Amino acid sequence: MRRTIGDDVDDFIWNLRWRGHQIIQQRVEKYGIACDLKHGHLHAAYKPAHMVGLRKDYDEAVHRGMGDEVSLLDRSQVRDLLQSDLYHGAIKNTRNMHLHPLNLCIGEARAAESLGALIFENSEVLEIIHGSTPGVRTAHGHIDANQVLLAGDVYHKLEPGKLKGKIFPAMGGIVTTAPLGDLAKQINPEDLAVYDCRFVLDYYRLTADGRLLFGGGANYSGKDSRDIAAELRPCIEQTFPALKGVAIDYQWSCAMGIVINRIPQLGKLSDNVWYCQGYSGHGIATTHIMGEIMGRAITGQLEQFDTFAACQHIRVPMGDLLGNPMLAAGMWYYQMLERLR
Ligand SMILES: Cc1cc2nc3c(=O)[nH]c(=O)nc-3n(C[C@H](O)[C@H](O)[C@H](O)COP(=O)(O)OP(=O)(O)OC[C@H]3O[C@@H](n4cnc5c(N)ncnc54)[C@H](O)[C@@H]3O)c2cc1C
Image (cartoon, rainbow, N blue to C red; front, side, top):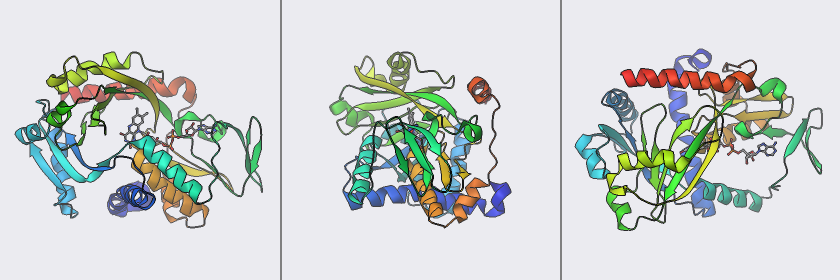
């Protein structure tokens, strides 16, 4: 993005990155959304070399006035927060939050309906109609609109002429254990959300009913996952030996929309048809930022939209065929580099 906005990019991105947190927090308060919103993250060093990057992030946060909200922890301080010997250190960040994303989504949908929005579920859009009165066509009907915003992320196949080969699915698996009772407080007494510094990382938090929700091992083939519980159990047991043999009650996998340069993609498909997609596995806060930018753009304030829309994105020819193998090869290469460090 430096190419499009120059040296101001650092301030632009730093300020923007917290906007999603503000929007979520304000909405949760305003509409009373019960989504277990809590503060507290640990970004943990899986290898000693990861401490270099964490120290840099910590210094930047302090430099930008977050000294009260971040702390750089060594191995033994992490051990006080997690019953795990896995990590070499961490940043604890109390501005960052974690939440139950489906309940946030349902709460926001209800809030939107209370303001007059109409939501039609199970109505797949089969075609977008361009023109002075744009619209969408579904199997059983159509909607005429003033403006159309396509926000289906990696799941839609619409507008292939302009969008095919720009975003690729990486499959992520998640499990939740059985309720852990008192053990939950022992393994993670401050109820922090935790993720490590690897390219293909593990991430976890406790649920409101005291289960461990654990995600990891993204698969870049674009194909649905295998036995997720069998794959993630060793990671859980390696992280928390106290959970050896724990029952796993639920497992699921879904696609994340990966963009090669990791910058969300937004733009126009025609005069009054817009799109916005590609959060590379970090969409909860980012969709709120981009939602605001798109809302402003559609009502005529184009400054932030133009900044993102000007970013160049790599488009892979024959994306269906080549996109995921290329992504898998790229991830393999970076994982190899990481192992050598
Ligand atoms: C396993 C996993 C773990 C993740 N963990 C995190 C995390 O810890 N933190 C984080 O910030 N992000 C995380 N993400 C990423 C986050 O979930 C996504 O970035 C985010 O959901 C993207 O939001 P979206 O609204 O753009 O798209 P989506 O949430 O994918 O919503 C798109 C919607 O469009 C609908 N749709 C698609 N095509 C059509 C059509 N033709 N007609 C009508 N509707 C259509 C879909 O049914 C879907 O409901 C994770 C993702 C996965 C898969």
